[in-house]
Image (cartoon, rainbow, N blue to C red):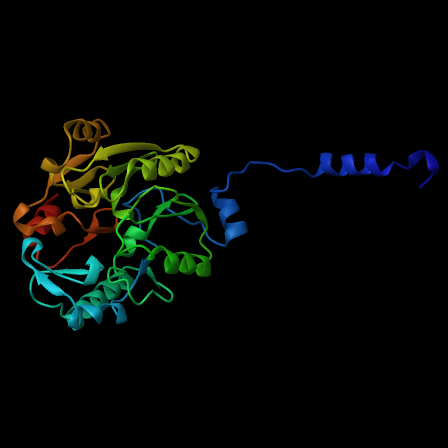
Length: 306
């Protein structure tokens, strides 16, 4: 290279970075980028598509404390552990073998539907509600939002879930922090651009604000629905079955929200109240195909005819 063709170090640096520079597009959640960088098209933007992967915990050592400790407290009709660090409804201690058998039946059913079952890595031995893995994270397009519990007997479930998601390579887009509270059962997808979240003593306004910021980045509208009384989660009041059909206890939901669902073309199927709250708290594994508890026969019959 002749002297007239040479460039100074500063010019070379500038030329290099004019040629190679950072770009925001394609977005993090773009399917091609997800496959290229993260090895999978992670996340979800609906509750009714074909279920590909689930996170579970089989009841184990954490249940031992409920077999010997605690005492029955009449005014809450439950066995309570020291400092209220665990509870079990009713006077009778849990039949752990039965719980495990039911869990195994569920995972067998999921696998038969072609769902990959992922087990929580190294769960903490003192957390008796670890089985409720849904509450530990909100799944959105591109990855997971780690939740934060407000109840002491659940705080810490997030840690092994975070480690498990890291192990399988799933991106964590955000962790609810500060004074924010959020549980996964408080969130549901209505369609690819609209989601709903319930606000109450399990998921508060600060947690919802943080969740909304992530969804805003994804172009998703978040509808905020107040829980009634001491209600826990919206998934005990409404669950999507397919794009235009949901099952619900309408008396748990405000009029404006029911009207918004109607405007979105979502038909409401009334759950049978005789089946209890679990008739709504079901799981769609593909559009119109649902896993429900065995004792919800009345509601299951309604769903079959829908």
